[in-house]
Image (cartoon, rainbow, N blue to C red; front, side, top):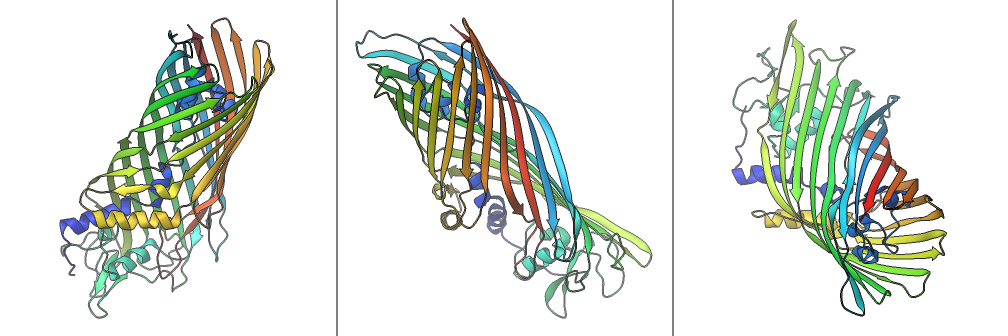
Length: 502
């Protein structure tokens, strides 16, 4: 078997195009700030009210309201659940549920206050801490029977002269050495896909789809990590009418993804195919920097109006990627098989997230509490990748982002009712999925209680987030259908904040 040897630059390009996609741009810019229990309990709608540490990551002008310094910490517990079904026209597959619980720490911070000698600019406050901006954790399990094989995807790429050391190269005999077994006869190679000298095309061992063979298949997708932001915030007020704030944000993130895909011929429908397994591992880490500027206006004693702008986050990101392919078959009454491993791929790149603009309004109802509404506008097409040595490839990916992603309007509303030392809270939020032709959204419902006495305060919140039905493809091809998995995803968060005024 012969195969073209590609240059190092083309190898890096192929790996790069596999690693960075529109999904990556969305993952790192589709934020859902969590922070304190008070912020979560009111639906995250406190940009105009400002009396919460989490607003340092939304509207930093909130720090201008502080009259006393305080420390706050928020541990939590989250429970995530998914329900997945492998869709198939020729078979009826069941749904599979997966759930996982985890302890979290979405917030810790401290605010210091000081009085100035200015008659009109009376306060100058400083805050430092960490807020949770995004959570990537989820597990999806699917299983069922359907037509086709991932080998057809490998073959299609090979015949399009696309070879990838992390995908279809693993199923090939690269150097004349049989990876998965011994030579059976003149028509077999022992590899999962091979080059047919007569047709001058790559082929898989069996035409899985054309023979209408139903294979059992199963898979697990496990994702973990998130984005946390270290904030340094300054702010104050002008004549008790205008609050201002500035935040230097240093977000840092980690993301791990493990995807396992398996095909099994349990019915022995194919004479010499037993099973295969393709596993991919991705490990991402990065840090960035951004600036946030906010203002809160108080035209009357009861009314609050706020505006805020977030600069793009300028990310520096590193990825490590590797994959393995296992293939087993029986031929001439003997079992053959083996595992091919990719090299460890490493790649670094930059990502510029889009600008974000926030508008908020709130009304303080005497000493009874408040109601508030927040609107956030983001043009997700503003995501821009850049690579040091692959300018043209980055431009092509950015053009794809610009054509696929749209702008989004995120809406949050909530309020608080004062019961003396206790407070009752409720809120809701809706975040649309900013992709043309995709009908997806994130609905968040929340509620909570607060207790304040002297210098001590405690807040408890429950937050429910539902991502409505979405789907993904374990693999895809141009000529024939791939598999489609339909998923529903829910997240339950329980947060407890404790704090001390000083």
